[in-house]
Structures are given as C-alpha cells and as structure tokens.
Length: 409
Image (tube, rainbow, N blue to C red; front, side):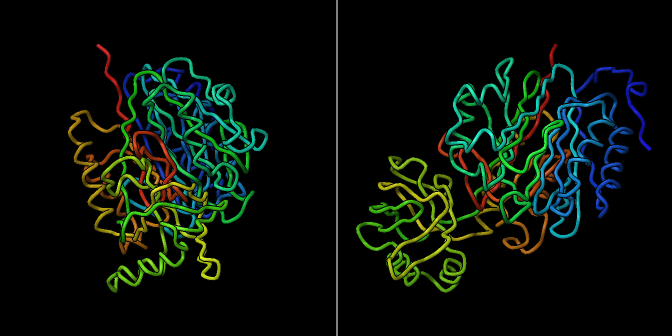
C-alpha cells in the first residue's frame, strides 16, 4: 500500500528539471495504477509539477480511479488522464492488450496547470476568448499548451484556432483527438478531480520550460491540385466544375497500380492550409479521409467538409515520406545541444504497423535520435500540429513536443 508522500518528500522542491515515464501492462486498472505510483515515488526526487496519464481503452471504466490513485500518491500535482486506442512508453508501442503509461514532470521555476472543457461549454465553435482564458487561467506568457479532446464533441478545426486566439502569437499548441472509443460518450477525460466523457483536457506550461514541436506528414499528393467549386455541408459536390466523384475516378484511372490500390482502399484528400501559396508541398495540406463516395450524385463526403473555393489534392499514405519527414524534423531537433528532458507524442492511427509494417516506428526513431529521453505517446484519431504557421487539426501524421528545461544563472 502506498502511503502519503508529504513525510517522504518533506515538500522539498526539485533542484533540477526532471521527467520520468513509467508504464504497466496489468489488465487490472488498480494494480496498474498502484504500480505506476509506486515506481514514480521511488524515482522522483521531489513532488512533481504535473502528471500526464494515458491508458488503453481497456482501462476506461476505472480510469478516474487510476488517475486519482497516482495523483494522490504524488502529492496532488496538476494531473490529466485520457483513453487511447494504444499508448507508447520510450521506444515501445503496444498496439494490443491493456497498457497504461504516466509521465511526471518536475523542475524549479516550472508552473503547470490542468484545464478542462466539458459538455456545458458546447462545441469549440462557440467558445469565446473569455471562456477559453477562464479555463486556461494564464498567469504569465505561456510556454506551451497540450490539449487532448474527444472527437465526437470537440473534434473540429475550431479547437486549435480558439485556443490559439486566446494565447500570445506563436505559443506552441500540440496534442490530438482521442482514439479510445468508436462512439460518443465512451472516451474518458480527467483533469485533476474532474471527470468527463466529452470536451477536452490539457496542460498549460509557464516558467522555466520550452516546448519544441516536431511534425511529420504521412501522405503524398497524387493528381493535380483542384479547386472546390461546389460544397454542401460535409460534402464536396464538384471539383473544377465537374462532379467530385467523377474527378476522383479520373485520378484513380491515371495512377500506377500501387497508388491506385492505396487511394481506392483508403481515399484521402488534402485541403491546402494557404490556398494563396504558389507552390504547395506535402506539409501544406490538412489531410482528411473521404468517408463516402456517392457516384450517383457525384459527391464526396468528408469530416468537416471543405468550403467552396478551397484548394485540394488527393493523397495516398506513404511510409517513405512519413519516415523522411520525421527524420528531417529530428535533424532540426538535435541541433539544440540541450538534452531533451521529455517527449510527448501524438501519432495518427494511420501510422504504426499499418503503415510501417511493425509497431513502434515513431516512438523508436524519436527515442533513438534524441538520446533516449523519457517519452509518453498515444495513438490519436487526428493530431494537432503547426501547419501553415498556426495550429491545425490534421490526420495521418505525427505531432510531438520536446520538453527542455531552462537553466537560470
């Protein structure tokens, strides 16, 4: 049994930045949580500023108890927890079976607070700046923000844009939509003592810390760029003045065998983040799956739709492109000679073994290139990443942040 830590730590503040990640694969949620709490207690030098806990969907029913167990055992820091299809710790990714991972973050001059939006706040489209700031409660210029949202109630482009509009320009925002459920009301989100099945939870960082984004795109454009000339709700009705489904069939007919098979099996479309940009590369498109192709009407149905006048291009998943993009992002990250104190990774459900042939590609590469930092990751339904100069909701990619402590003289 884990007792209170007040006498163990004597409330001594940590003297240096430290991040610890622990994991457990017990099927019993309470057993897993006690294991995480006990290991963190042994390894930490003082009470942490924050705890982030991610668990596979197997732990959904008792996740609030697990979060409470870890939080209370570690002296009640800012804490968030959520469910995902699968989670990662260090270089490992567990795509099946129960798993739970927790990250503890501590350091002098570090301030972290948990926040939550729930069903009473409505969808992000209705969030005012005053509401957002009342939830985030910034006390100084934030150094970064992590947000994890239920896709059924907060999964729209308005989520990152409303958050960004309430923070100083350029504040790093990362995270993603939860993948722990296939229907509304089944994801579990916890922020400190508050539990919800909707909305979003997250952490806001202030003080002596930096959050450095890492982004990797997982798709390659095929066919020509096109203009949406007709749209109706979530449907694209025409592209370049022709029925949208007819245009897709033409693109399929002009592709090679492998690309044709990939696009036909998993049709994707990219919406240009900046239609005015003359040359658009793979990092300039927001990837959306095409949910349905109605050849009778000529419509393409996709989540969120695409407004009339948008520039789009059909996309195919590409493991080589995904690996190359990640490698280039890591090349930039290693130019900073300060050690990576920790990494928080949101990797799309379209990656993993379905794209690379085996689990752990993304977590393994990041762990290796950044000299084995503590890493917590999870599979996301869609990631939040900086595209076109501001945070946006994207798919089939990867969004991570590297935590680096700031040394004061």
